[in-house]
Structure formats: C-alpha cells, structure tokens
Image 1: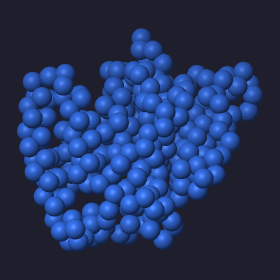
Image 2: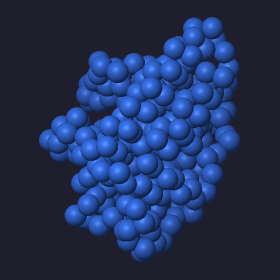
Image 3: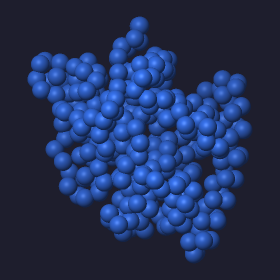
Image 4: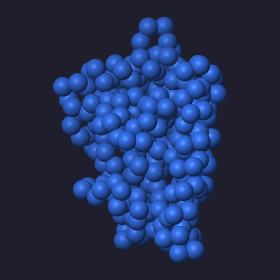
Length: 283
C-alpha cells in the first residue's frame, strides 16, 4: 500500500472510530457511568492499532490511587499510547481546550487544563491536587512541552507540589514513565528519522501528522518504573529528580541500548541522605 493510500485508510478509520465513540463517552460522563472511566483506554488501544503503533511494555502501571504518572513528552501521539495503558486523565496546557476536535476529545477524557504561566502555578497546582484528592489517576508531562525524543528536557517541578498530602486522603503515589519511539517496520529509528515522530519546535501539527501517518508500523517502548512518594523523597525537587533520572535512563536503554544506572525508589532523602538532582526549567 502506498503512503498516500495508507494515509487515507488510516485517517478514515480513525475518524469513523473516533466519531462513533465520542457520543458514547459523552453520554457516560453526563449519566455518571463508571465505564466512562475505562472506555478511553479501550478507545486509545484501537487508535494505536489503526495508526500503526505497536507498544512494547516494560513494568506495569501501579494500582495505587490516587496516583500521578510523570512521563516524558515526544509527540501528540503520546496521548493515544499512554492513554491505551492508563485508565486516567491527562494534564494539558490550557490552549488544548480551544483546539477544534482534539480539544473536545481532551474534555471527554476529563483532562485537567493548566496555564503554564508562573504567576498561576499555585492555582494550577491546586486544581491538580483537587482531582488527586478525589482519587483520580493523572498523567503529567513535567517537561511542559514535547522534545526531540532523544532525551528528556528539563522538568518544571512546580506541579509536583500537587501531590502534597491534603485533608484525610492518603499519600499520592508518583510513578515515572519513559516513552521511546524505537523501530519503524522493524528497523531502528535513528536521529535522522526521529523528527518524523517527534513533534517539537516550530513544526505545524497538520503537516507533521500528514507526514507521520503515511509511515509503516512503529514500535514504541513504554517503561513503567517503580513508583515512589513525596514523603520518601523529602521535597518536590527531589521527587522530580527521581522521576527525571528514571525516565532518562529508560529512554537511553530503549533508544541506544545503553541502560543507565537507575536510582532506587527514594527512601534515603527522608533520612537525610542526598537525593537525586534534576535539570530544572522555570517552574
């Protein structure tokens, strides 16, 4: 099948599938049905199949609730891939809510929309915390934007403060997740091909999507690393440091076959020992 036919077939199947599921999910949310929490994962699993993504899974998502999954961000396709594995909601920048079509999909998955401006960091942190208090599973991209897929960008650590204990709720688990696009039709994806899948810089969404959708079968390695808790790390920066080290090591192992030394789930920080440091962007 030529790339043009493949594009047309994939897009047609994707939109037919999506438009058929949207009213069902909308009705489930309005009626308060419990299956509205799990339908998005089923929907995303089929999206991955239709769009040619094959997920290779390492580890398992924690059953702890509430939980914050912290993942590196490579492309808009991360949503389908992580969404197929985690029955939860994403944390996204406020602009996504205004996007046609994709903004509607985000709302149907009960996405938490945040303004990444520093002046509103406390407000956004509290909005996330409120959902965690309700026992939700949330997915955060702490880089704040998508990167080139070779390594994680510096983390914005402010939103990690949302896992601080509130009221009578138990501690919030935090699980780092590394995601790497590794093979195209069985051939390793090198640096020259990675921009076909990594969406970053000034590249427009539509041209990038049109280019990517005509490619073959893509293997994506998703690694769920051991979860931890803020109390074990001692501070949100140390917590972000643990997540960053795990994610960077997981990406290096998946992409380059060079597994990095992985830190153990922190316990040392609570006893006064040094915690892992993290490259930090403006919070």
